[in-house]
Length: 524
Figure 1 (tube, rainbow, N blue to C red):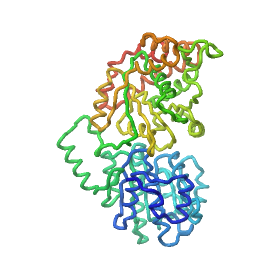
Figure 2: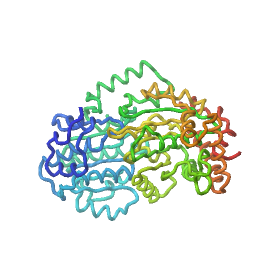
Figure 3: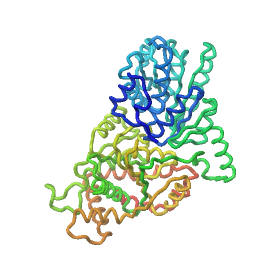
Figure 4: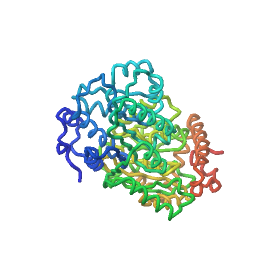
């Protein structure tokens, strides 16, 4: 049962900061984590919960309370709480949350260590003292090795947040080196880290191995319950040995995935010739759906190719609605009126990515086209829908993409777009505990024709009309046509990147490349 914030009896200054954030109720994971982490007998904890469940506050609130209720802390005492996160964007967001919670606690100084910042400035801040430090693994280890004033001798609390992504980013060796350094430092000074916390939305075998290296006899807490980690892991291992899912084992998590109750997951089988316009029709459905009365509507569209992201971002603003002839000054009205379009991918500069994310956050009706650079860590409020234009490369990425919506009690929908030969992938997801319902493309095109045409004709005609409008937009502008060609080639390259165990679902020999190129509005 979700409890109210006031039931926690937070110290007055922390309570003021949380109240300023507008938080009145705890999520289930925050409730369960609080009860466990405030238990003096519990040293180490694994927090396993879906993305968007409020995991940051689930560890930050109890740890801050433990720090404040302990011996008096001064800036010169150095780092008391260390939070390790995989990427700088998440580090900045975590630091922002720390500042909000500690708005009225001036004696606890928060700081950040991330790549891209000047080391001399970071050294200066470390020399003055930073009681709560948020850091990325590489930059943290760099300072540990080279910065003499880096003081972790009094460290009491260690958090590894987004542990699954940290491993995916290749930081496992850095984490292990950091843990060895801390053990050595603590032994030298005769100090002990009181609590260590590992946070992850998924629990793969790599996470299990890392937990045994970093943690000691941890307790596992989820939004559902709390249990002994060793017992749970043993049970999971025994079941996996019995089942022996040889080819899917690498992609199978050791514990069931947890999805929020407010999340609806759907899939649609698309014609190879019309997958892009199906995505556009789906976006139209999302932003005109009478069943969704929210003033704020936001969608995130994921692709495995940054070239596709660039193309979608360009084409979304120039495709016209074939069912509104003559209602727009230029003859036809844009397909998605009053909707802002943004994009984020790894080929963009850090400054451009940050600006695009900020613009998306501040928009009330917007679409963000992105690669998986935005699937984890970045926090976007009020995302109502997630579209997987391309199926992700692994089940964990599906979890993280989907976790951009239905956050902290809000409703949300995930839409997976597949080619006909990929439909068995749905069975794979079902075996992982994902519950999906099928939506036919006819529903999407019927919605467009019903809303914007005085006569409802054949649904196939509706698809063809939108496809023609799309092709006219692509072929009518050189920039769009070149972007379409780049998108097709980028998509084709990304399709070959699926891991071996997934290629039975994403078999490139079954692709009709000429039809797929037409779906991008180009001929090859």
